[in-house]
Length: 323
Image 1 (tube, helix red, strand yellow):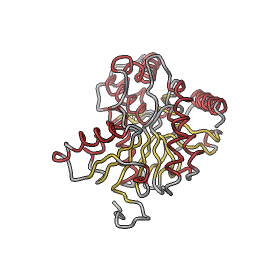
Image 2 (image 1 turned 60 degrees about the horizontal axis):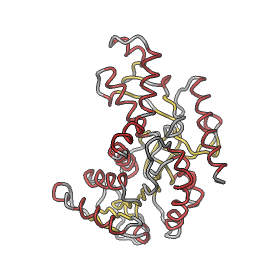
Image 3 (image 1 turned 45 degrees about the horizontal axis):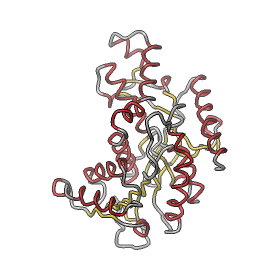
Image 4 (image 1 turned 180 degrees about the horizontal axis):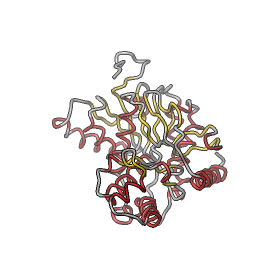
């Protein structure tokens, strides 16, 4: 790991800033504290006392983890951060879709992103607030940062949910499942079944090895359950926070360790599958400089058509909000 903390104009790869200290922001800070990736975690919130309380609470776990500084700060603290994670925004309510949050959260971003831009921030801007694809696009436009350095958490969590569900269905370790949710992080998301496999074995072949033959109904149910996961959780506990916090940690690992990992993050499409000027989730190589390039996984005709529909859904929302 690079260490340039002695240079005020350089990136400190041991420093992360979290903007928004609600359920997701505080859970992400806790997850990152336990990970040992950073030596400095700065928490920013419009409610300074909330940020101070969360920072103090999480700091009390440092004796069980690794030495680090965790404190409430302000936008001046972001200047040399390696990653700024934005989780601020209105919470998704029961029966409310992620796209319903657009207008409220764009207004919030119009106050947050310019504050980041004016600090000559040179790191990676990671958007987690929903609707993440729309807000990542908004962050790109509002910040004028290079496209590779503005990414969203995208369908990293949806993909983890898919792997978990397949693992449960087949009674195998979900880490052996290789599959992606692509497109919108939301109701138009697509399970890319045609490229799914279990440690190199085609999914349907492996299913039959485990005694499952009704592939169509099984995959439809799994995809639907994954899509509705957030709604189910929100209806029970009012928010989702732990799964997304682990997703944030995983993305940060890929960046800080320059892993070149392939993750389905939200980023600007540049003609892949004939899609341009919209942010959505596709598998991409992620490292110290953010997104390197998208990975063209195999998709069948129907999946490509649905990906285009997902892109159009997002473009319509962008147009309605003059983005």
